[in-house]
Length: 239
Picture (spheres, rainbow, N blue to C red):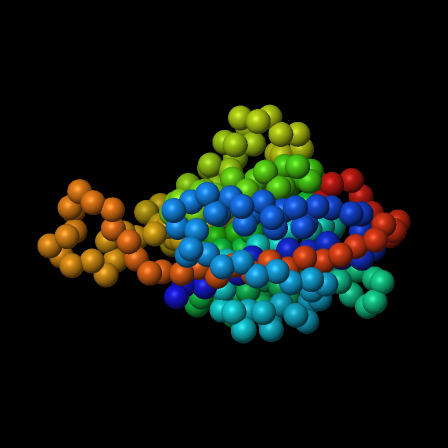
C-alpha cells in the first residue's frame, strides 16, 4: 500500500470558489486511467491549521493537494475561528511538511500566489507545485484534472506537470499562467514517482518480456474542502 493525500480548502471570509468541482474533477480524471484503483480519495471539510499534522500522522500521505485561496502575502488561507479565515505561516507550514518527508513526496498548492511557499517546501520535499500569479477557477480545475489524469495513467510528477500545462495551452484556458513545479536538489530526471514501476516484484525471467506487468501499489488521496461565505476581508478575484 502506497498512500497519497490530496487536501483542498475554501475558508469562510473568502470569495466562493469551486473546490467541490475540483475534487470531482480529480476523482473522475483518475478514474480514466488504468491505475485508478491505486488511488483512494478522501474528502475533508472546514480544515484548520491544527488539522494538518493530524491528517499527516493519520494517513501518512505521499501527496498533499491544496485547492483554495492564496493571499497576496504569499500565504494560503485556511479556516480560523468560527466565521473567520486564517492565513498560515509559510515557515511553519514548510517545517510541518519537512517532518513528514519520509513519506510525503509531493505538495500541490493549487491556489494564487503560492510559488514562494512551494519553493520553500521543495527544499525538503521532493516536489512542490505553486503559482506566481492569480489563477482562475477554470484554470485551477483544468490543471488538477489533467495532472491527476496523467498520474492515473502511471506517469511521473514531471510528466504529469508537463501534460497539465500542455492541456491548458491547448484549450487556451484564461488566467492559467504562472503555475510552476519545484524539485528538491538531488531528485533526478529519471525519478518516476508516483509512476507505476512495472518492473517491481517481477521474476527476472519476465523482465523485458513483451507483456503488461502489474503491481499492487496503492495510492490513497484525501481531499479537504472548506466551505466559505462571501465577505470583504480576504475577498479577491480568482484564488
